[in-house]
Length: 186
Image (cartoon, rainbow, N blue to C red; front, side, top):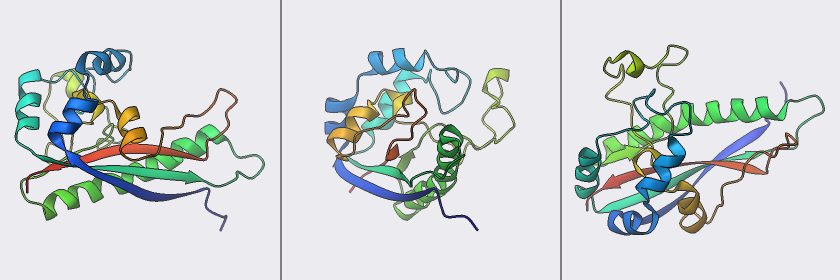
């Protein structure tokens, strides 16, 4: 068995939904970036969302726990493709992350998780482009970005873990981060 190429840990921060919204929500700027993505309007977790429903959702909660799922990369052995390692690591982290978020949600009745780009349908395309309802409505959660939050600023300021990206030279950064949240009431 080969040595692992990454390890995963979680960092977290607590804030209020009011502070999170005031300091880190810029719907126009964030959604302008989302419009550049191939998933815009093609996945149920992605925008566009009904703006009034998003506002109602946020108004229902007072507390926000922010989670950073941090993928720490080990030095790669010769011959490993850094982009494939990053892809595999993200897929592995997502498989762990959503069940953990949903478990946190169940442990705190009335709360709601905000996840990352949905992969629940696996290789089957999302039903949204066909005008059909979500196949996994009890598990699918919107992402923070999809409802207007700046996850780069949240990661930097609240988790004290700036987002790092792969360089054009295909060099893995020391870590990569997925940012999620759990909204709740006392």
